[in-house]
Amino acid sequence: MNFVQAFRERVDLQPGVPALIDHTLVGDRVLTYAALNRSVDAISIRLREARVGPGDLFLLLLEPSQEFYVHFLAALQIGAVPVVHAPACSLRQILAWIREAHPAACVLSLLQAANPRLAAGLRHVSKKIYPESTASRSHWLRIGHIGTLEDVPKEAPALLLLTRDRSGQAMVWRWTQAQLGSTLELLFSALRLKAGDIDLCSTPLHLLANLRAGLASLIPIGFGWVNRLPLQRQLEKFKPTRTTALVTELVHLLRKKSSPLHRIFVLDAPLADAERRFLAEHSSQATVDVLFGDAVPVAINRLEPAMATDHACCVGNFFDAVEARTLPAPGPGTPAGPPGREPVAGELIVRASFLPTPCTLQGGTDSGRLFIESPNDPWLRTGCHGYFDADQRFWTVANG
Image 1 (cartoon, rainbow, N blue to C red):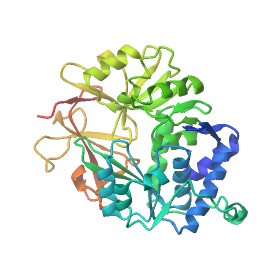
Image 2: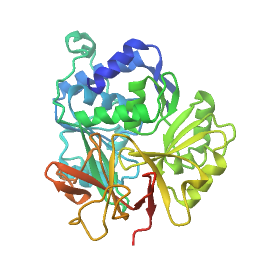
Image 3: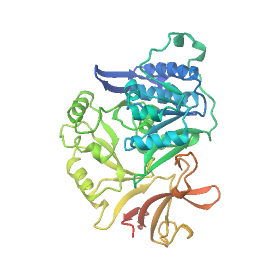
Image 4: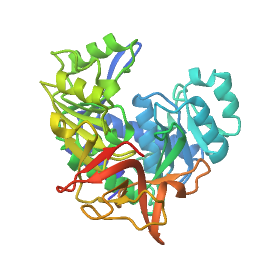
C-alpha cells in the first residue's frame, strides 16, 4: 500500500478532523481530511491536463502552505516526482539544480514569478502552474477521474529533496516508492504519533507521517525574528502539543513557560554544548528527544546532561532497522568495522532499506557519499567521526 492509499483510509476514518492549519493575510485556514482529499483530487486532474505524468520532476517553489501540500500530494497521486527544497537552500543552489535536472513542471506563486532572477532560471521549464489562477469548473464534473491513482513501480522515484550538506554544498536525496513508504512507517513508529494531536510541522516528510497517523498539522507562520510574535499567537490559539524541529526554531518557543509543546523532537544531533545547555534549561515542561540523521533519522537519544562529555557527544541508540559501523581513518579502501570491535574510532557509516540515495545535481548517484563493500551493497557515509561504547551507542569526536 502506497502513501496515497493509506491517506485515503485515514480520510474514511476521520473525514471531519482538521488535517492542515495555516495562516494567510486574511486569517487562519483549517482544512479537514475530507476537504484535503477533494482538493488533491481536483489538483491531480489539473496536473494531468497540464500533461504532468508519472516520473516527471515536479518542482514546488511555494512557501509551506495548504497550496504547497495540496500540489505535493497531487503529484504523489499521479505518480509524478515532487521536488522540494530545504529552507537552508539558497536561490543560487535551486537554480543550479534546475539547470542540471530540467524539471518537467513547477508550481509557484505570481509574486515569485515577478522575481527577475527566478523567472530567468525558469525559462526552460515549459509548464508553470500558479495556484492563484482559477480552476475550470469542468474539473469537478469529470467524476471518472476523481480519486484515480497511478500504479507506480516500487523502485520508481517518489520524492526528491534538495538540501545542503554539513559543508554547505548543495545535494539531493532521492526516495523510491518503497523507501518513502518505509520512511513514513519509521517516522510513524519512532515519533510515536497519535491520532488527534496537533503537531507544529515544518517539513514535508513529517507532515506526510502526520497524515498517515491522523494528526492535525499546524504549518508555522515562520521561525524568524519578524514572525516571533505572530508565531506565539498561533501557538496560543491552536495549542499544538508536539513538534519536530531544529534547535534554532525552538529558541523562542521554549522561552515561554506557557508553551503548549510537551513533546519535542530535535533534528540537530549531535548537539553543540550551547544548544544542549539551552534545551536542558528551557525544556522543564517538555519531553525532548534528539534525532540523528541527515534526511531521515537513524538514531534517537533522550536529552540528558550525561549525553555528552568534554570530548564527545552521544548521537543515541540506533533504530532496529539500521546497521551502523565505523570506517577507519586510512580511507575507503580499508574494511569497515562493526560496533564494539576494532577499529574503535572512525567515520560512522549506516545502512537501512528506508534510507534515500544521495544524488548529484544531474540526477546520478553521488558515489562520494557512499562506501561500497560489494556491488549493490552501499553504506551511507555520515561525515561524523567517533567510536562505539560498550552499549553500542555512537559517540562523536572532532575529526582529526
